[in-house]
Amino acid sequence: MSLESLLKEKLDPEDKLQKSYTARYEGKHGFLVMSKKKLLFAEEKGFMRKTYNVLLEIPYTKVRESTVEKNQLVFEASGKKYGITPEEVSPTTIQKSFKELAKSASSK
Image (tube, rainbow, N blue to C red; front, side, top):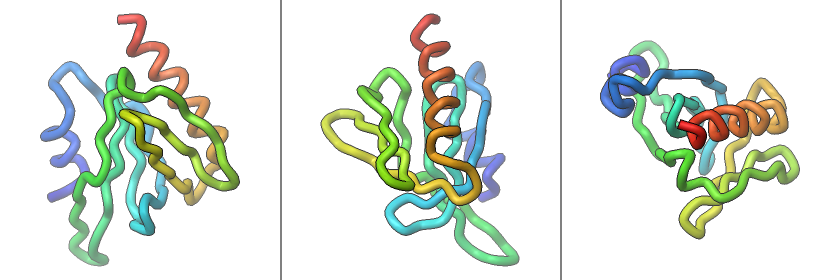
């Protein structure tokens, strides 16, 4: 399944992709995807024929806090912590995007 197909399946029709970053989650390579309503981590597998699997899906309304710890962006939701390690941009940059999208989602 392509990343585009996976997102169509996981996002509501009125929800749209806003940001995407290459990252690692629990040692797996993939994409941290931010939509208007939630964040997802899609693991990327394969070389020539890439497939994607969602390992993490959290609505912004469930995220209690986001912090930067060393080289990771950590989301706290439902009493658990989820550490995302960005590969190409700083965790602070991603945190800023997350806060803007979460604020926008909560005001609707």
